[in-house]
Image (cartoon, rainbow, N blue to C red; front, top):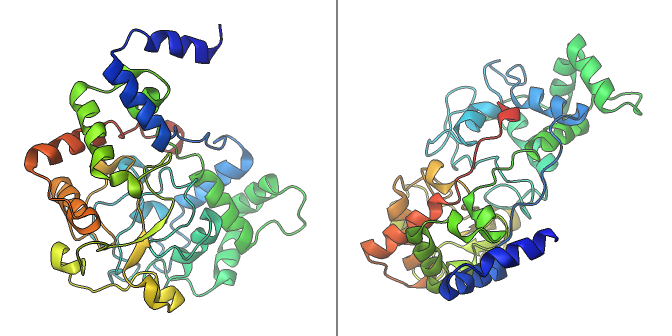
Length: 322
């Protein structure tokens, strides 16, 4: 008997309502895609680079500074301080489960993780190195890195390059999957979700949150205006900065206040919320999203149910990454 047959047999033991809920969820959501192997020379090099503080102007910052693995890939700050203490203008999103997102950064300016990895190390407010040659020279002056790059890129005569640096970090970040109870539920183990979580899932779909939060990440797959129904968004979030979003990249007026729809994976662990970290409370973030994006005013009981469902999206931090 195959795996699918076993799941179907198990499902026969569940109520009709539970089976209908599962069927509906499977139309909009997917289990996490298979992550990369964390034990390859390329992924192991990427892990070391992710934690490497020498690749910063003050010698004290790494990818892990703003995206700490032990804390679900976030620092829980509205915006993060850089090498000289200056704050950035946008919240540092989690690096977990980002490997299948269709774009990277809040404004979607990077098409993939490798391109994204080139940004922070050269950003004058973030890690503060002056150019790709700075990165390459630091790495070439390390016998350990010379050996690790040679192992990771055995066919290249000059394995240490800025492109290969970014490729290695992207490979490591592609191992950062956090499967949760929700994945087991989607696979047919309906009782992996509690009854309150099932109620929250049903409400999440009925309210219309699936207009943006779909797929394996429940987000991360599209760009959307913040303040689609009611705006401008800062009147609801109290944001100090009126961020134009993707318009700053494209110059297109239709991209004003457009941001990448974030994944909801591990959302209970990744406060504060939104592109500027303007909202600390998950309840308040749910309320604002329903109102600004869908024109729906949720009561506290509804908000509580959706927040309870979100707990099923919290996975386990991968031990290999620590």
